[in-house]
Each structure stands twice: as structure tokens, then as C-alpha cells.
Amino acid sequence: DAGVTQSPTHLIKTRGQQVTLRCSPKSGHDTVSWYQQALGQGPQFIFQYYEEEERQRGNFPDRFSGHQFPNYSSELNVNALLLGDSALYLCASSLAPTGSSYEQYFGPGTRLTVT
Amino acid sequence: AQSVTQLGSHVSVSEGALVLLRCNYSSSVPPYLFWYVQYPNQGLQLLLKYTSAATLVKGINGFEAEFKKSETSFHLTKPSAHMSDAAEYFCAVSKSGGSNYKLTFGKGTLLTVNP
Image 1 (cartoon, chains in turn red, brown):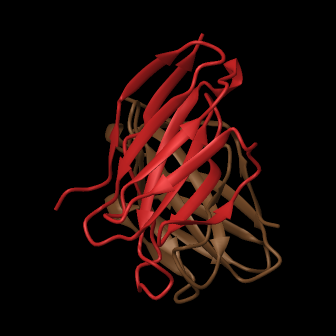
Image 2 (cartoon, rainbow over the protein chains, first blue to last red):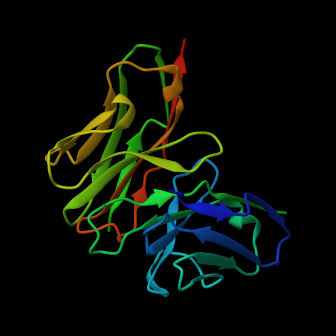
């Protein structure tokens, strides 16, 4: 049973560029959440996708956007990159509200460095 | 709004000693509480969760935590530390009711285990 997978593992971008990160949820899961973990900090919630729609959003600017595909996989897009966007980006998958498992399963993350 | 405070950004114990990592939460609604562990260059792994059933929760790798509503605490303990326990530990809170709610994390506690 494959867990949550993310690609790429590492990424280096220049200020002002755009980046796309990808996530495949754990088998059987239909909800994907994205978190940003800056160095030395706990993860911060960016947004959550369910049924191909953004259901919840944290305190992040519109430069951060996402998408969920019919197969439940998801993308996180960040435009106009800033140095402060350098972080580990974590994807977590879970079951919809009717699911009985109150858990979010995390992927290994994508390390983004903005220079 | 919900928040988590982890007391002590760094805890150091000797192998075989008691591990105690402190977590206090703030929530305006009944919370669900979680402890996650993060090994270097990896994602988050769920250790245990409180979802309004038993207040003493047992998790993986010998860890347990007790939900104390009167103290708004959810401290993590392990009777005897092992070298393999060295990692960063995060306490998180979400609204009760399902896995679709966002997780709010503390800043983390780095556990060092000395031989």
C-alpha cells in the first residue's frame, strides 16, 4: 500500500519565478492538505482540497494556489517566489468527513530553496 | 481559534531515562489532539491521537499521552528513552469531528538522547 508521495524531493528556484509541487495521496484517500514548514518551525496549514475544490485556506497570500485532479492527486503552485518561501512543503492526505480515521498521513515533503 | 504551545524547544535525556515532552493547547471547541514525530529529512509520522475517547492514549514505540482538560494539556511521555527516539516532536490540535479539519502545530521540541 503506497503512502503519500511527493515530487520533486528538492527544488531550487530564483526570486520571482513560479513553482509547481505535486502530491499523490495514500490509496483510498480523497482529501489533500498542504502545509509549509519553515526551518525550525512547525508546519503551517496552507489549504485543503476535497472533490476538486479548495475547502479550507490558511493565512497565505493568493500567490499560493492549488488544484486537485479527479484521481485525488494535487498540485501546489506558488507564483512570484520570495526568499521567505524557502521551506519544506508537506502534503497530507485523509478521508472525507464521513471517514472514521481521524488522521492525516504526511508525505516526505518537497524542500524548496529560493535564491 | 486554536493554538498549541510546546514548552521547551530542546529536551535532552539519557538513554533509559523518562521522556516528558510538554504540550498545552488553546481551543474554543472540543479539540482533537495529536503528537507527530519527524526524523531528519523526513515527513511527519503520527505517534498517537486523542479523539474524545479515553483520556490516556497509547501510541507507537512505547509513547503515551494524557489529555487533561482542566490543565489544557496533552503531554507526551515514554518510560525509557532509546537512542532511536532522537527526533523532533510536534504537538497538533484540530477541531473535533473528522480528519478534514486543518491541523495547527506547535513549534516542535527536539529530543536528544545521550548514551
